[in-house]
Length: 151
Length: 151
Image (cartoon, rainbow over all chains, first blue to last red; front, side, top):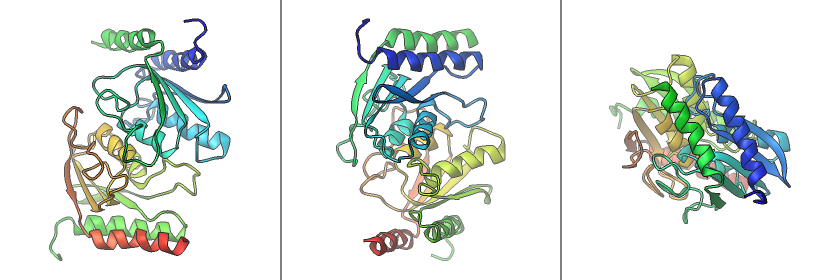
């Protein structure tokens, strides 16, 4: 899908995920964009930081609010290679992110449609526009290859 | 309830919440304990860090894994004055925390029983022992007083 408007964003997130592999981190990458411009980039850093909460999305959101000097990302899009977990979906709601685009679905821990839906929860005070499955195969194969090689 | 075994933990979390007020931060405090010993303490720091994700529980968990040199808190208890939101409930699951004790229930954003239940979700790979409502009135009044004064 060469003309898909979200392709560049997911490809930037994939580039982060590929960097993670070289550091022996679980290959999930994320970028935040505003007006099509990347304002933050991150990959999982749970090994380097010895911190199970150091997911790509959380780090990218924290860097974006710092970079933009705002605590509301309602005019931003988060691109991430894997459907966010509960923590990261919750962080997306706290940051009032406007739009979420993710690659592979996560049927074990994904909280943006798969196991539950935090980012479109009827009782929370913010709801996010969500597009899942963009470059899903490529994003998912990166993860599967990583875990296969470690078995 | 002078002999309640969790009273000291919630009181330590309340002390953190009271510190937050002096800094004009939303008064939520958290501590992590292991074998009855406090290993980390934090309060909300969203204003100071200009970061909407800087909740007391997330910061306390991150400090605890650093202090203990482990990425699993399964032998730890998190005490927090307010029922955790989705982000913090998700962080609790990621850190494989053993036990959660909280003060006031949060019927707007609480994801440990009120709006949803991330920490005891049947499809996630970790479930937490939960006790809510310990010193709930005192914990809740601290928050109500803070928001009343700002109106």
